[in-house]
Length: 149
Image 1 (cartoon, rainbow, N blue to C red):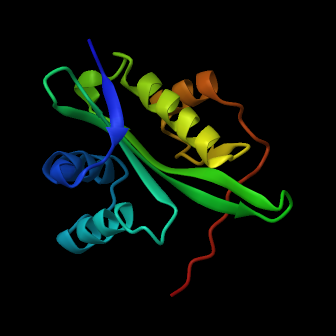
Image 2: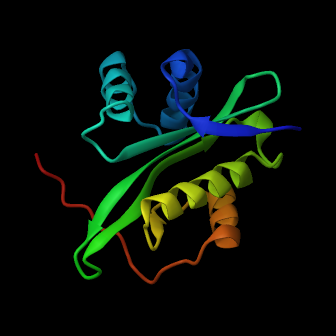
Image 3: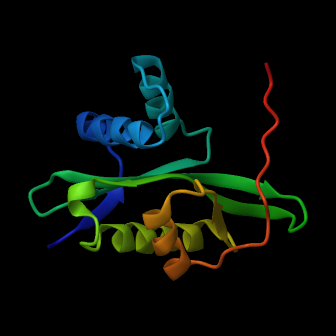
């Protein structure tokens, strides 16, 4: 299978929103038009260091995506990358899509002069974690969240 990865374009909205909605379903997060429109606007906001990649098969069908951004690292005195979202259509898993996305992420991070890219995932995302263990090093950091009500 031939996979191409590129930055999202305005013409990708329909396919992206289908994948993004499936991603939200996976994490049991509510999804609505407002969220979709907010995230879509971030992708094309030149004032945000927010990036998005889309993977397509040889027929131009979107089969995966990544959202990532710059994140200041005060101890380094520079930005690092932070991978917010990664999703591959279940029908295309184990077909090289995730590797193509990570290759493009690596190239983009080098272009941005980021020394690293970090991300978090759910403890029970076993399939994703198997990929992450293969492409990256697990850190010793634990993640906490302060909820603001």
